[in-house]
Image (cartoon, rainbow, N blue to C red):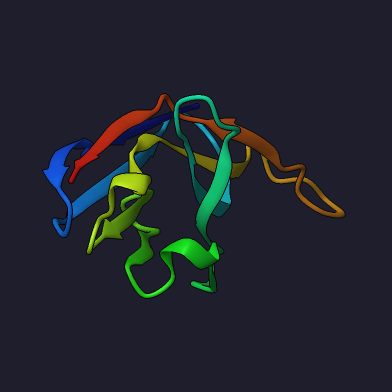
Length: 123
């Protein structure tokens, strides 16, 4: 199983970017998908997440500016980032809870991470 994040780049403050996260490989199901970021010298933090049924959650600093979505058929998640600020500069990572095989009594979910994509916002 692999997760591939893409869409990062350099923009000026106030600009927009759309990140994508594609899940590939052999697996049974994808549940929760999330976006995290890590700025230089800081710990990785959760940015946004979305369940398989579409329920979303955001960290306070991005509410109203970022939108997380997913396309279950394409096995992809997206992070639409608007009104970007210099403090949004970071490497952005996606993760997903994945069950490799169906399991009677409840699936066993494991967390997979993709390589990051760099977002740089200049003032």
